[in-house]
Length: 175
Image (cartoon, rainbow, N blue to C red; front, side, top):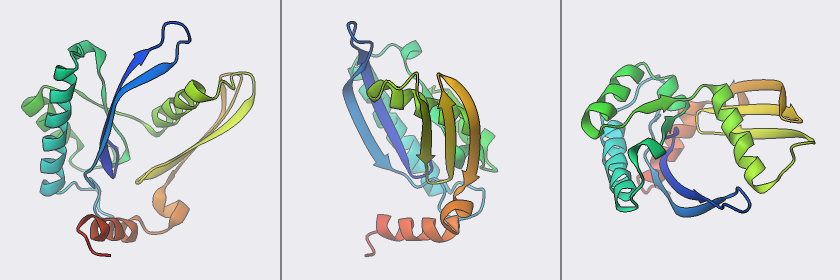
């Protein structure tokens, strides 16, 4: 779950290459952070819960064992004033545990994702994770982190409240 969407990715590991084979990939717009305040609206919570319920059905239909899945959340939940309540609601209604990633965790997972497609283990690499609520920059060399910088979106591209209002207008069909 990120600031703008809820995604599901089901993969299988290729036993010969160690790379992931995508079995299922879906993305649904949810817009958790609709303004510049650290809150999540009731409508966003409802949308998230309904989408997660559908994604849980997909996991069950694909026979993914419960211990073989992970639900992660990023800045919209991490910075929300209602983070604990949201996490509790998802656990109580769907039985899912939400792992709220730190900016550093997000950056590390982005780097691991890059390695799946570009095996650059011995090179210096800059990965940039541009999200709806934060942007993380990581410089790594030979799998060692040289530098991690996390920026809130408003520091990078302008007021996140303005951006989220534009996203809301697009989501509601105003062009």
